Image 1 (tube, one colour):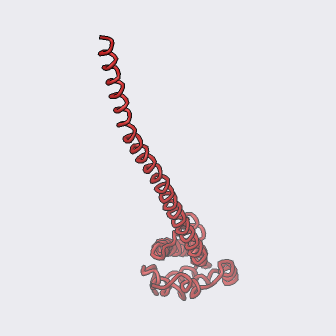
Image 2: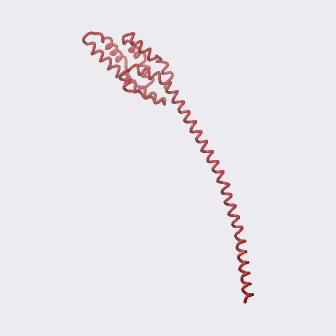
Length: 202
């Protein structure tokens, strides 16, 4: 699959320049742009958006716009052909961006208003979006690694603190067990003394 940078560089025309050339040539240049790039666009996105007959009909409708009476109909037909291609290109471009792990969200209203110019703008925007998402993914991975190391350190410290407490508890238990016989001995002596005292009184 062709990477985003190569895709953008092979088409490579600024949107402002495309608009200017469209105005200067009376609407002819967008047809030339489409005829030049649609095959490569379809090859990269793996979606068929147009063919040579489609471009020819678009050129005919655009050329007959200035004919009196029926010029309005040809203008409308030309606009519809541009819109159909633009929405196909939108879907193809979004799918291609998703395959490249770039979240490209294109505005359907902008496609309707600016069609071919907006498609060109989004193609030029792809490398910038790819760079942005790569940086974002790198930052999230580093943050996850840092949080994992912090958790491991906390677990190690907590385990170190728990062990001495257990040892202290064990030592206290031993001390108590050692003291218990002495108490029993003392009690037995006291009992013997009391018995002797009773015998003497008798």
